[in-house]
Image 1 (tube, rainbow, N blue to C red):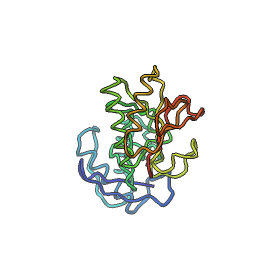
Image 2 (image 1 turned 135 degrees about the vertical axis):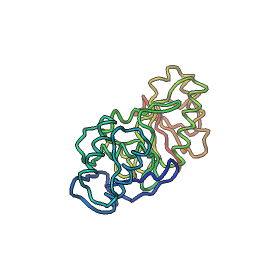
Image 3 (image 1 turned 180 degrees about the vertical axis):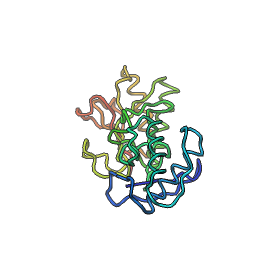
Image 4 (image 1 turned 90 degrees about the vertical axis):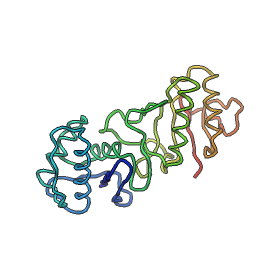
Length: 236
């Protein structure tokens, strides 16, 4: 279970989740420091005046009626099941709103941003592989800016890692925030593919890229299994 308190747009106070935890469940009747952080989160969201009809919660660490009611309003506003339970989908939502995990991983914005689309999550209910380390994320964002400005295309980002790394059920790798799949479905010519690869491998913290073709480029490793996407490995 993981709660993050957004003290301001630029400051975070984070309670780490239990070691290895990938899920969470907070509900009516719970109490403790994590509930306190949830209440602070909800009050911070109310202060932004985005979600209508929220009320200020007494921050007492008890998951009572006002906490349930305000959580339901946030869930409903963002299209989640409004059950008043802080589960995985609510955790994903809060992580998206705040954008940082307890171990400093950064999340791709839900849906996408300038020069990229986040194809990993179709909804907040889905399994969340949208996380990278800070340096890997900064480099991935530079990929997107380049693609938008030079290729006039959005890159399609697929799997990164779980919130704080760990086993990824879809991949043997992608476990430490330093692996990223980029779909090539909208790079329609060899020239576009090669141009994108040239920029990616020019970044100092990119160790290698797996793809079906190397285009005789350094750092690009031929791998027939990666026929429809670049697999980017960032240096550890």
